[in-house]
Length: 400
Ligand SMILES: *[C@@H]1O[C@H](CO)[C@@H](O)[C@H](O)[C@H]1NC(C)=O
Ligand SMILES: *[C@@H]1O[C@H](CO)[C@@H](O)[C@H](O)[C@H]1NC(C)=O
Ligand SMILES: *[C@@H]1O[C@H](CO)[C@@H](O)[C@H](O)[C@H]1NC(C)=O
Image (cartoon, rainbow, N blue to C red):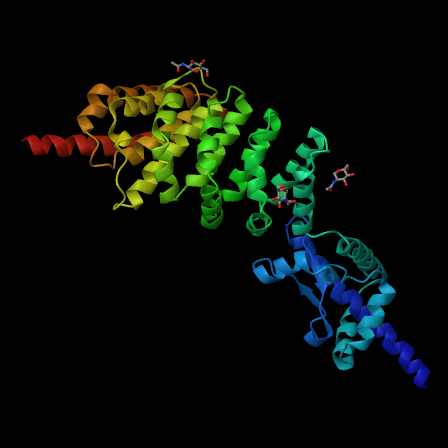
């Protein structure tokens, strides 16, 4: 009797475990991290059989790095798991859960078992933090080939996209390594290093600050002038990511003549279109940030005639994306009281430019597959035109 009971309860237990693991497998799938890490809880944590490492929790991330024991916390076999579960479970609760599982069809059960197997394999995968450590170690190893270094950087590029990983990368000293790699004789190595820095800095004031403090901005700005266009494009991407909504970064950018750099790119039609799009996008972004921070000293280039003209001239480009970005920049610039509206009219020819664009968009809307885009762009153009005429009107009424 006792023996039968025991077998039955073991049966329930294994079903229950399947149930729990399936829930874990689902959580695993929903986590879009490169390799999310699941760890078994310790006995003192009671009924919480599974504990997912909290991505925002700095201490747990750090302990993953430091405590090698914890890394081996996963069970190497289903048997081991069962043994563990038997010793740590509340039998009443297990029965209840097992009843739910018993409603599953054999094929569903089979499917769940497969998912568990997959999960078991994943449990043995190194964490993101470990992967980054390995990649950084490879980058530090000068006996490895350039190809190996490039591969390590490709891994970091994927990993650094998550903000938690970017924070870990900072703790691991990764930014020093990346900045060093930006001086590599190989252009691809320089390009991807800049790209990683940009990705990691994106939308993270903390990372922006770290990277700026390490002096990466001026190096990146030099790379924007590279004759290797891919390097220049990624460097400008990184510059943008570093100073976006970051007043300290922007001050550094202006101190390093970033305004001249932008103007050179905007006014030179032989420069790669991707670089020009990024430059005008950055102008619009800087202008917006300036409008949001009224106490910040306004950089003089916003009201510089030549600079304004180079932005207005972009509306005559054959590239719709560039035109759109230019319109957004002009829309923002029109809100600056320091800008002489007469300069935009007479020197930059904004009214003629807007008129020409209107005509172009009308012609474009005849082509069916471009119609929607042309309509959207026309709405934006109209908005700019209204703002422009409003300012001109203000000016006229002032004169009267
Ligand atoms: C790489 O090497 C530098 C200098 O030799 C060292 O300071 C740094 O800690 C090393 N980083 C890693 C991740 O191994
Ligand atoms: C560097 O890489 C070589 C080749 O893979 C390896 O034998 C060596 O142990 C590595 N050195 C370090 C310090 O990791
Ligand atoms: C414009 O860009 C091209 C290509 O980068 C460069 O060779 C040329 O010197 C630039 N022209 C001016 C006036 O800066």
